[in-house]
Each structure stands twice: as structure tokens, then as C-alpha cells.
Image (tube, rainbow, N blue to C red):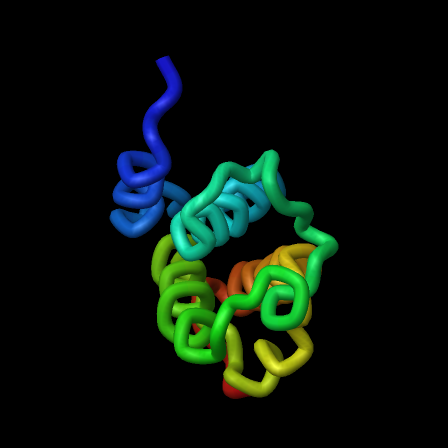
Length: 112
């Protein structure tokens, strides 16, 4: 049985991805976008621009998107790097890069 979007999002928010794989990162991005947009992942693509195409406002991007992703994946992304995030694929790339940086430094977050 497949969990509903809210149930999966709760698992995401509880940090169910302590040592995330590439699949976990993509899943996390999809889950957060499903929650913000209120629709299934079959109704949007990760290549669509978050603000322009999906019409996600800046407050939702700042608080509901980046904050939830960082918390659930246990990674800290420097604020300036999120400025490079225009779509879901960008978010995945940014998250992967920072997770790898964190692993390379023994879990310590380097200043951005």
C-alpha cells in the first residue's frame, strides 16, 4: 500500500533520510513539491521552473521548500547556493553537492 502525500511528507519531515542516496534526494524533492503544489508528481516535471512555471511564491520556496529539504536530509545549504535553484533538478544537484561536502568533512558544515 502506498502512503498518502501527507503521510510521506511527515516521514520526510521526521528525517527519514539520515544518509540519503540519490533516490532519497529525488524523492524528497518530489514530496515537498507535491505538498506545496497540492498535486501528484505526475502533474509536473522537475525541469519546470519553480517560480515561473509552477507559480510557487518566494515565501513557500524559502520556508516550505528549502527548509524542509535541509531538515529532512540533514544537510545545511548556504543561502547563496539556493539562489542557483530554478527548478527541481537544480535542487537535487545543490542538495547532492552539499551532502557530499558534509560527508567529506565528517559531517561538519562548511561556511558558505
